[in-house]
Image (cartoon, rainbow, N blue to C red; front, side, top):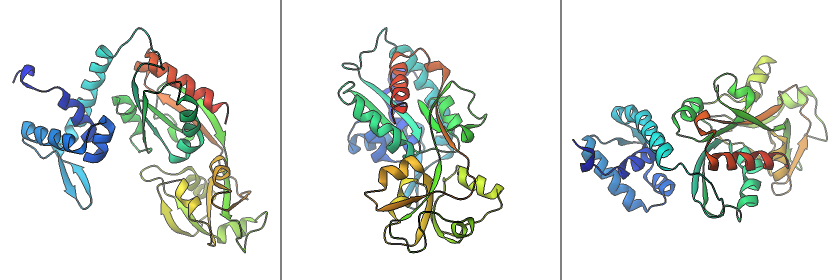
Length: 301
């Protein structure tokens, strides 16, 4: 088959579909309507003679062939972008740019929300797609599936031998409802371990607090887990539940969610968030501009 007989735009659609595993989100990622994305999926299924995405319960899962295509498709698009999208300049006021950033919802609220506010007029055509942190973050950064990863340095360890820049530090605190009857302005270790918790589960990524508490041989009763840092804080009002949360995030929500922040009496690691990117993007002017703006914003929070 000759390339002239293939609509190469389908490669972009295929990448979005394989990454998102959801037609609606893939359409949003490409700024097209859902019917157009559904039509692209139909064409791709016919071309490969494979369903590519199959329904399992409420979600779509990749077929074995689709799994095998993820890496080659992303590498092909990255190579094409390097050739076709290279520009001798970048003017944020006029040029269009799109980036995918992998980070926890905590980082989105604490860092990226003020970033978007500060660049709204400066870069009106910039589009950022946020994705939650997944266990294969290094592979996704390497393949170009994401442009940047913002995670704690302790979580990255040596898994990402890529350029990086420290952004900000934080610490974990105990958070409860403002009128929690069993928690005053301070708690003892015994009190802290007897409280019932809503906990961040981390999904496929082991939370730092879990690692620290296990090292201390401390086990706290967990009634509910969620793959979000924000949700536990929003569930505390009117309950006797507690959560361990990053202090910067808790301070953002303390008033609206009617919370009380208390010093956690056990030793937990500090949080040191850093931004990682692939060295192939070092010279990309749009990428450079966004990295600088993220770093500048981190210094102001």
